[in-house]
Amino acid sequence: MRPFRTARLPLRATLAALAGVSLVAAATPSRPAPDDVRTRVRYGGASKLGNGRARAYVITDAARGTPTEVGVALDEAALEGLPTSGMGHAVGHQGPDHELALPIPATAGVPFRWASLNWNVGGHEPPGVYDTPHFDFHFYTIDKAKRDARIVLANPRYAAEADRLPAEEFRPQHGLVLGPPGAKPSDVAVPLMGVHWIDVRAPELQGLLGKPERARPFTATFIYGSWDGEFIFAEPMVTRAHLLAKKDATDPAVRDQVIPVGTAARAQAAGYWPGAYRITWDAGKKEYRIALTQLTKKQ
Image (tube, rainbow, N blue to C red):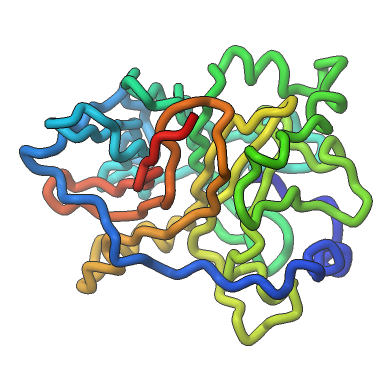
């Protein structure tokens, strides 16, 4: 996700009309089954991250052959030795400085083709919300070559494609293109990413909604992204500190956290779409996992 181009006051005005919505639950008791003989895990190629590696994966139900989870796995050393300088998402910057392109194993019914992992050294705007070291995990339904050719400022149709939003039936519940009042999507689009749709129930945004008693510091949030009338990515965004805390957590609901997301009535890219995202530490494989889970088939 990119920084917002406005100060906190315009952002507050943009969200004020939606202030009555409820917060997302921090976790849900409905969790995926542990990896065992009933499931199959397939990994894509690995890329170096910090002192370790990152790779995308798909979990399928072994009996039914249907996907149950799509995610990114970071081994135990990947959160150490990360870059300490460089830009994340800055206005006028063509793209993030720290990005890994991770291939997702081709699996029937999975609409996501690859995952982009972005490391934001110092976070980004707005101040006091997302300005902490964190990762973006974009799961794309379009291939990288198409993204790199079209979602760039050099594209003469950049503004027109950004401003063309998906039809209402494809928009997630509680989703909003976040930007100042009266701004066009092209004003807040991010090169090499797209137009970001945030869930207005997100706890870290409640202070901007005038509900400071409900606000909680950003640890994890979920975003959808669109381009040229289509939703092209689903994105968990997680702080490094929140990931590290999973390893030593003794409460199973904390160690293996599943957070529901807003969903749409229909999907433009047919296949299995998430009803939640998952952040966990797998002690057996010694890896952190950030995933789209509770997959449901949509047409």
